[in-house]
Amino acid sequence: MEKVLFYRCEKCGNMVVSLGEGVGAISCCGQPMNALVANSTEAAGEKHVPVAVIEGEKIEVNVGSVDHPMTVDHYIEWVALATGKKVEIINLKPGMKPKAVFTFDITEDEADEIEELGANCEGQPCTFSYDDNPAEKIDVYAYCNIHGLWKAEI
Ligand SMILES: [Fe+2]
Image (cartoon, helix red, strand yellow):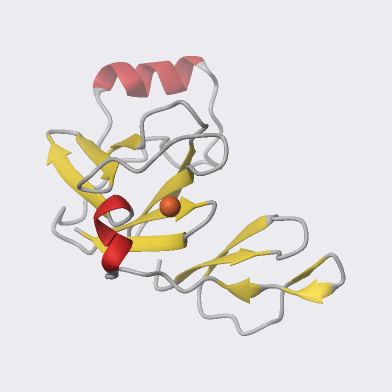
Protein backbone atom coordinates (compact mmCIF):
# COMPACT_ATOMS: atom_id res chain seq x y z
CA MET A 1 0.00 0.00 0.00
CA GLU A 2 1.45 3.33 -1.02
CA LYS A 3 -0.22 5.24 1.72
CA VAL A 4 -2.22 4.06 4.68
CA LEU A 5 -4.13 6.64 6.66
CA PHE A 6 -6.19 6.16 9.80
CA TYR A 7 -9.12 8.50 10.42
CA ARG A 8 -11.00 8.88 13.68
CA CYS A 9 -14.32 10.55 14.39
CA GLU A 10 -13.87 12.91 17.30
CA LYS A 11 -17.53 12.52 18.26
CA CYS A 12 -18.14 8.77 18.27
CA GLY A 13 -14.62 7.29 18.04
CA ASN A 14 -15.36 5.44 14.80
CA MET A 15 -12.19 4.55 12.90
CA VAL A 16 -11.71 4.40 9.14
CA VAL A 17 -8.66 3.12 7.28
CA SER A 18 -7.89 4.70 3.92
CA LEU A 19 -5.65 2.98 1.37
CA GLY A 20 -4.14 5.03 -1.40
CA GLU A 21 -3.70 8.62 -2.36
CA GLY A 22 -7.32 9.73 -2.44
CA VAL A 23 -8.04 13.27 -1.36
CA GLY A 24 -11.79 12.92 -0.88
CA ALA A 25 -13.27 14.04 2.40
CA ILE A 26 -14.40 11.42 4.88
CA SER A 27 -17.05 12.39 7.39
CA CYS A 28 -18.80 10.84 10.37
CA CYS A 29 -21.44 12.18 12.78
CA GLY A 30 -21.95 15.09 10.39
CA GLN A 31 -18.40 16.41 10.60
CA PRO A 32 -15.14 15.81 8.71
CA MET A 33 -12.80 13.13 10.01
CA ASN A 34 -9.14 14.08 10.23
CA ALA A 35 -6.32 11.70 9.40
CA LEU A 36 -4.37 10.77 12.51
CA VAL A 37 -0.75 11.86 12.51
CA ALA A 38 1.54 9.17 13.90
CA ASN A 39 4.07 9.96 16.57
CA SER A 40 7.34 8.13 16.57
CA THR A 41 9.40 10.05 19.07
CA GLU A 42 8.40 11.85 22.22
CA ALA A 43 9.03 11.64 25.93
CA ALA A 44 6.36 8.94 26.33
CA GLY A 45 7.68 7.07 23.30
CA GLU A 46 9.14 4.16 25.22
CA LYS A 47 5.63 3.06 26.14
CA HIS A 48 4.06 3.72 22.75
CA VAL A 49 6.42 3.18 19.83
CA PRO A 50 5.81 -0.40 18.66
CA VAL A 51 8.79 -2.73 18.85
CA ALA A 52 8.68 -5.46 16.20
CA VAL A 53 10.71 -8.64 16.07
CA ILE A 54 10.63 -11.03 13.12
CA GLU A 55 10.66 -14.60 14.39
CA GLY A 56 10.55 -17.00 11.44
CA GLU A 57 7.07 -16.65 9.98
CA LYS A 58 5.81 -14.34 12.69
CA ILE A 59 6.17 -10.65 13.32
CA GLU A 60 5.81 -10.13 17.04
CA VAL A 61 4.92 -6.60 18.00
CA ASN A 62 5.14 -5.31 21.53
CA VAL A 63 3.79 -1.86 22.23
CA GLY A 64 6.57 -0.05 23.87
CA SER A 65 10.06 -1.06 24.81
CA VAL A 66 8.40 -0.73 28.23
CA ASP A 67 4.94 -2.34 28.20
CA HIS A 68 2.13 0.15 27.69
CA PRO A 69 -0.62 0.02 30.38
CA MET A 70 -3.71 -2.04 29.48
CA THR A 71 -6.24 -0.72 31.99
CA VAL A 72 -9.89 0.11 31.23
CA ASP A 73 -9.08 3.82 31.19
CA HIS A 74 -5.82 3.69 29.27
CA TYR A 75 -4.93 0.98 26.81
CA ILE A 76 -3.79 0.11 23.32
CA GLU A 77 -6.96 -0.33 21.26
CA TRP A 78 -5.28 -1.94 18.27
CA VAL A 79 -2.04 -2.75 16.54
CA ALA A 80 -1.75 -2.68 12.74
CA LEU A 81 0.73 -3.99 10.24
CA ALA A 82 0.99 -2.37 6.81
CA THR A 83 3.12 -3.67 3.97
CA GLY A 84 3.06 -3.22 0.22
CA LYS A 85 0.49 -6.01 0.09
CA LYS A 86 -1.83 -5.78 3.03
CA VAL A 87 -3.02 -4.00 6.09
CA GLU A 88 -3.85 -6.16 9.08
CA ILE A 89 -5.34 -4.86 12.32
CA ILE A 90 -5.48 -6.75 15.59
CA ASN A 91 -7.81 -5.39 18.26
CA LEU A 92 -6.75 -5.52 21.89
CA LYS A 93 -8.75 -5.16 25.07
CA PRO A 94 -7.94 -3.95 28.59
CA GLY A 95 -6.27 -6.69 30.58
CA MET A 96 -4.51 -8.19 27.57
CA LYS A 97 -0.80 -7.81 26.97
CA PRO A 98 0.08 -4.86 24.69
CA LYS A 99 1.19 -7.37 22.11
CA ALA A 100 0.14 -8.62 18.67
CA VAL A 101 1.49 -11.38 16.49
CA PHE A 102 1.16 -11.17 12.72
CA THR A 103 1.78 -13.96 10.25
CA PHE A 104 4.56 -13.06 7.91
CA ASP A 105 4.10 -16.10 5.71
CA ILE A 106 1.65 -18.89 6.34
CA THR A 107 2.47 -22.54 6.89
CA GLU A 108 0.96 -25.43 4.92
CA ASP A 109 -1.29 -26.25 7.88
CA GLU A 110 -2.65 -22.73 7.90
CA ALA A 111 -3.20 -22.86 4.13
CA ASP A 112 -5.14 -26.14 4.56
CA GLU A 113 -7.21 -24.58 7.31
CA ILE A 114 -8.11 -21.61 5.12
CA GLU A 115 -9.09 -24.00 2.33
CA GLU A 116 -11.26 -26.04 4.72
CA LEU A 117 -13.00 -22.87 5.81
CA GLY A 118 -13.87 -22.30 2.18
CA ALA A 119 -12.20 -18.91 1.99
CA ASN A 120 -13.05 -17.12 -1.23
CA CYS A 121 -10.24 -15.08 -2.63
CA GLU A 122 -12.01 -14.15 -5.86
CA GLY A 123 -10.29 -16.73 -8.01
CA GLN A 124 -6.84 -16.05 -6.58
CA PRO A 125 -4.98 -18.55 -4.43
CA CYS A 126 -5.74 -17.82 -0.78
CA THR A 127 -2.18 -17.83 0.40
CA PHE A 128 -1.83 -14.34 1.84
CA SER A 129 1.88 -15.03 1.71
CA TYR A 130 4.63 -12.52 1.11
CA ASP A 131 6.70 -13.49 -1.87
CA ASP A 132 8.16 -10.02 -2.10
CA ASN A 133 11.49 -9.37 -0.55
CA PRO A 134 10.76 -9.51 3.18
CA ALA A 135 13.00 -6.49 3.48
CA GLU A 136 10.32 -4.34 1.87
CA LYS A 137 9.05 -1.55 4.05
CA ILE A 138 6.82 -2.76 6.83
CA ASP A 139 5.07 -0.21 9.00
CA VAL A 140 3.70 -1.09 12.39
CA TYR A 141 1.13 1.12 14.11
CA ALA A 142 -0.30 1.18 17.62
CA TYR A 143 -3.30 3.21 18.74
CA CYS A 144 -3.55 4.34 22.37
CA ASN A 145 -7.00 5.49 23.47
CA ILE A 146 -5.43 8.52 25.15
CA HIS A 147 -2.16 9.22 23.34
CA GLY A 148 -3.23 8.44 19.77
CA LEU A 149 -1.38 6.86 16.91
CA TRP A 150 2.24 5.65 17.03
CA LYS A 151 4.32 4.20 14.27
CA ALA A 152 7.55 2.29 13.72
CA GLU A 153 9.16 1.00 10.54
CA ILE A 154 10.75 -2.43 10.37
FE1 LIG B 1 -0.87 5.75 26.20
